[in-house]
Length: 65
Image 1 (cartoon, rainbow, N blue to C red):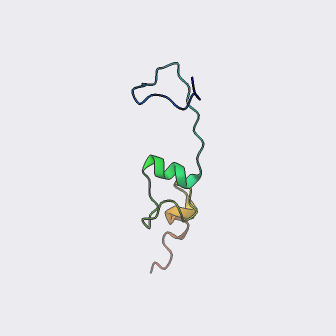
Image 2: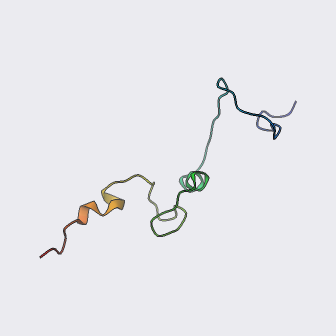
């Protein structure tokens, strides 16, 4: 046989099978079908998690009268 990753198209993963995935943030976002808020594919440096740096929470209420 060939390498284990060279499986036939008809192979279906079983419960006991193990899968290892290595990807960059951008590649993982692409695999998961996620996009950044500006429409780009994770090119803006955010990691997709909600937080002050990407959510606008830090500036909430700024400029309120």
